Image (cartoon, rainbow, N blue to C red):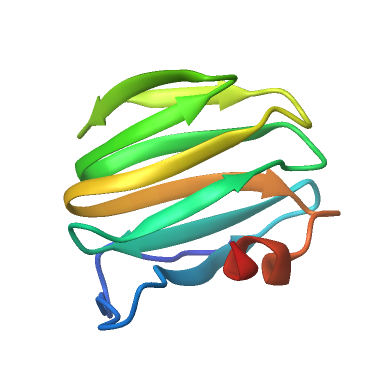
Length: 111
């Protein structure tokens, strides 16, 4: 059994980049926490495998395939592989991202 907390050791970075941390790694997924301050963003990018995004706290504008949606605390979005998407933080947020264990954290951090 593994245990992690999405709420412990929260750090909002002062630069433009969100704070990205792997919380857990299982046989099939990496559970990643993304912490963003209002105004921070992740430019358009694609994931090579399906992903699930859960808004744990805060608010973002989420773009996928040219459509924008406002996501708030409690919202969950699933995307297939290779779907272009972007995020703009509206209010300080904590996001849980589930990615394939085959995906690389460096890819997420580089966005």
